[in-house]
Amino acid sequence: MARGNAIRIIRQVTLGIVAAAFLVGTWLTQARVTGWQETLWVTIYPVVAGEQNMTSDYVDNLSAREFAAIRKFVEREAKRYGVPLADPVRIDIDAPTGMPPDPPTDGNPLAVMLWSLQLRWWAWRETGDRPGPEPDVKLFVAFHDPVNGVALPHSLGMKKSRIGIAHVFASRQMQGSNNVVIAHELLHILGATDKYGPGNLPVFPDGFAEPERQPIYPQRYAEIMGGRIPIDQETAEIPASLRQTRIGPTTAAEINWPATNHPPGT
Ligand SMILES: [Zn+2]
Image (cartoon, rainbow, N blue to C red; front, side):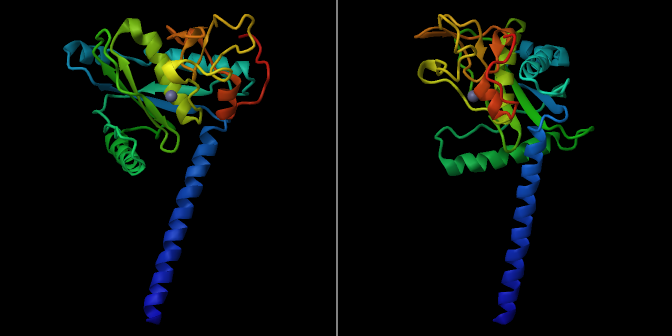
């Protein structure tokens, strides 16, 4: 009896130490990732999601150049907010992977939790043994056949695992808006929340890039987490590229950028 108790206590203490080490490790990584003291390493893994040959040709021909706009976007916005780091992100592209496991559709919390564990395991198995240092953020970008009017699966970015899945079109004309989708998920991973409501309309004021603009409509830019450029009270347009996109003050605060009420030079 006494011996059984001792074993149980040892087991519980051991589990406690392991859990504490894991939590501290997660917290330290998160603090480093959003500390903006050193360059954030982001690796993009393309995924061929379409069935046409042109989709795999498109993916075969991708280079880091197609995603350079994301780096420039973060650089430009970081500078506007006075982040004291010249190269806040570095974006590499790696060889393609298979398709990540599909998220559950019913939103059951237990199913979501199991899926997130499954996704981490999957990501580790697909990319863990690749040469080079482990990136801070892994973005799986699934390229689909560009078919008019077809809705893509939802993209997502997870803060804890620092894994994102973006669904985009395998089309050069769509590369600009693809990069908006990818940058949006990257910012979710860094702690930003969505700022749009019903009908995909950006929420005022946080989902507006220039909430103080007079007259308020039409806006010139989309706020990255608001997702669209507000044109009037009922209409908002998808930005064609990150050049039409800004990081608003609330998103900036969420990703731990210095607080400023009036970022200069929008
Ligand atoms: Zn989102």
